[in-house]
Length: 338
Image (cartoon, rainbow, N blue to C red; front, side, top):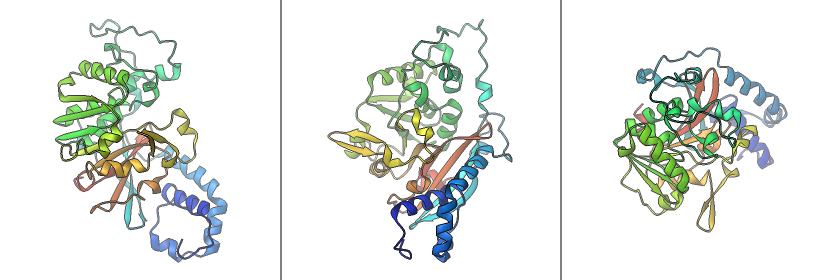
């Protein structure tokens, strides 16, 4: 931007997105480029983005892990690239998780543990119903979900990995929903604070935690998570803040690049977008794990003002050779401890 003042903001935005998604390169590489190169990049950007997204989704050289017990290997992410965003370093990585197929089998109907009616409710789309065991392996023991949770709960295999990555004494799950992440955190953390503004989701989360036998390790709190963060409700209490906010519904997946400014969350009489939420979380802890869609604008994740640790790790979750979701990790504990 300093060298080429005649380049408009839209071009800068496209080039930034391309740099993060397509080919990680150093800042001095950009500085050495001339306007002709930048113009060519702009011209071919759509083709490049489309091609590279297909290549990332395929990931033909990856292998799968055999089980959750192998947590040491499970946490070994492969570095994809490093990009300097201002004075911050954005490290993009990928980690291969267990395939979903192991969760697709219908449990033994003769099991005494099955308590729930397994008929699909009319309000639940068939494509979501078919993935119910991916969300909760103990679904047939009576798991409860509201309609929104069917497409917003973190799949269990991903939640298990996040719980290992975020292992600490006390963790805060500020948008706990129906409890998918909070339940897994209860296995790796001494105490879990789970906050949601929706009373129905919170009751479902308590019920689901009871099924997994971890209800006593989770403190469920109904309230506005953003206001609690801004007012320092959990400051100096929690080690890690985990955030999995609403992404604006299933339509997020149709966007080529998911803009963190495109989704606003209610905060009193004001709205806070998903980009602002990062800085708000830092007011509680420097160690933040931010669960995001796979098509997130990666550069935006590193444009926030950081503390002493000037690094951001954006970890992509590969399942059955496809990128499913990603998490931005902030803070020395979550990044350096690896």
